[in-house]
Image (cartoon, rainbow, N blue to C red; front, side, top):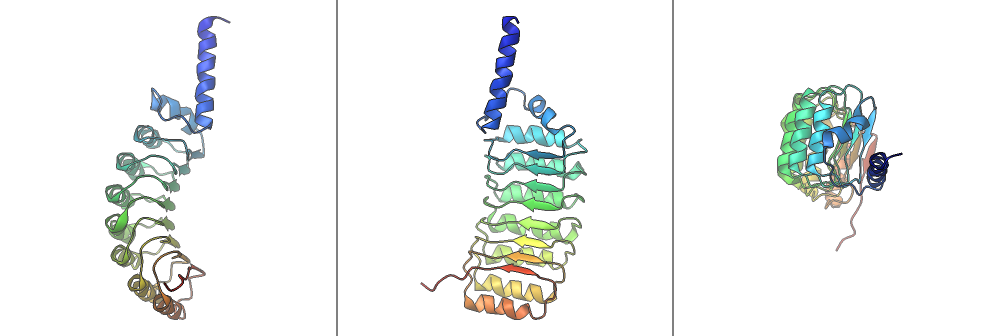
Amino acid sequence: MNVVNKLSILLSLFLALAFAQGSLAAVANPLEFYRPQIEGKNSLKLAKRNLTDADAVAIAELLKTNTTVKEVDLSHNKLTDVAVKALADMLKVNSTVEDLNLSHNKITAAGGKDIAAALKDNKHLLSLELDENELEDEGCAAFKDAIMVNASLQQLELSDNGITDKGLETLLQGLSANRTLTILDISDNLITDTGAFAVAQFLKANNTLEELDMQNNRVGAAGYEAIFAALKQNTVLRSFKVHFRAPE
């Protein structure tokens, strides 16, 4: 075996080991690096890989024409709105991806707006996870119009995004016209009794949502009492997760 072949083998082993350990932050040619991990596969699981926006842009480009990958997990990385813009453009033309996990990244309201806009065109995504990002009210509210017209999304996770009553109330306006979303996670946000009252009014008329997670917010007894009263009129919700905070 000549020196060139030995070096090639060593380089391949190094890249494989680095990728497996989640320490590969960048590659010389992302498109060619990720192509074999996407082509012919059913899922792409790249959580905790120190991925950058350049990685996500390459992945999004490859997924535009891919017809096999249904699950994409890019959670726990370093992705910003730049990456999300590329992924949103992908969702506008992709007809295969059903589950997209972008939790634990650095996505702000701008990224939320891009993803929300893509949902207006996408008719195949079933689950979208955006937990532990930085969407805040502006990013959350961006989903209002998208949710009103989207007819495929069944699960939306917005936990720990700094969302207050204002953002939640706007989102609920969109959900009132939605007939497909069955799972909503708004836990670990900044929602108070005001937001809980809005949820109560929403639940009285909604006949689609089956699971609602509101744990670890700032809702008090009055807010939860309003929701529990509303549940007497709701026959669809089967799971409601709450966490009572002890009085300070």
